[in-house]
Structure formats: C-alpha cells, structure tokens
Image (tube, rainbow, N blue to C red; front, side, top):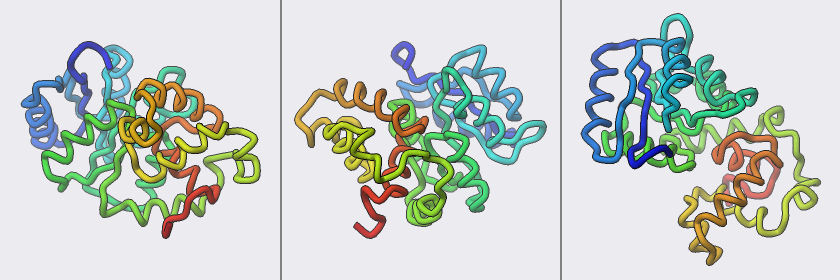
Length: 225
C-alpha cells in the first residue's frame, strides 16, 4: 500500500450507491477514496492514473462492465495488477466465476453490513482475498470442478512447491490471513509474504484467492475436510 492510507477507486453507475460507498469508506481514518467513477472505462483510466491500493467495482456498468474492467486492472496479462473487490447486487454464477477468472481478490454482495465492506477493503489491500460467506461453498464447489484456470496438477504439486510453500498453501486454503499463517508456522509475516510472492507464479495464479481455489482443485484439501 502507498502511504498511510488505503487509496481506493470506486466504480458504480448508480450515483446514490457510488456516493454512499464513497462516504462509508472516507469515514474511516485509514481509507481514502481517490476517485469515484460511473463506469468500467473510467475505473481503468483512474487506476492507471492514480495507482490506488484497491479498486471497488460494480459488475453491471455502461461502456465497460466490471468483469471486463477487472481483466484490464488485475487480469493475467496485466504487468502491475491492482487488487479488485467486486461489490454487486447480483450473485449470478457466470458473474462470480467470470470475476474470479479475471483475477479479482474479493466478491461481496451490496447487502453486506457496512463493517463487512470496510473490512473487505482492508483485507484486499493487505493481500488477502475475501468472499461473502453465503457464496463461499457454492463458489468453491463450482470452481473446484473447473480445471482450466490452473495448469499445475496435484501430481506435480510436490515438485513445484517446497515443503514450506505447500504448508502455506494449505493454510491459505483454510482461510487464514498472512498474520495467522505466520503465527501457525512461527515465522514473521514478512516471511509469509515473501513465500507467497514465489508461490503465486509457480501455480500460475494472480491472487491468494485463486491459490486457495487451486489447492481445492488439485486435491490438496477438500471442501468437506
């Protein structure tokens, strides 16, 4: 993150929602909304010009929708991706899966409590993925059945990851934050971050959330277990 504040770009085509989210975030001492824009094209432009720490995107927007904008902000072809949090009224499966395949770090429904939204922005800014609790099981269940996102297979997991990296991926899949992983392994949080910086490209993913999905897809952990 840059500076002491989490710098955020908000994109939503509904003026009241955009203003409400901006006010909600600006009330926090550690968060600053640096741009509030009405569509995906403006979100991409603002991200490139202002280099925020987090971009909050609606999905249904004119000119360029949230998923298409996310691909340009945090997608696999973006050299310096910015973490994206999707905030939407819609939990339609195609939107969910399209968002995660575009590389977003989090997905919340707009009816989430204000404190949950604020915490999600902080979590995404800190490099931790977040997803609405009501969607977690369904999303994991569907994404686990999709193999196209992650080219590394379970048979090669031990070849690709060191023993410590494998430990971190397993803890990541359990939903632990960097600080919690550090405590579990009795190491510094900075050490966990360094490991993650090496793990993500090894797995061919761009976010912690996708790394967790990779662990489920490849059988390192199971939804039931």
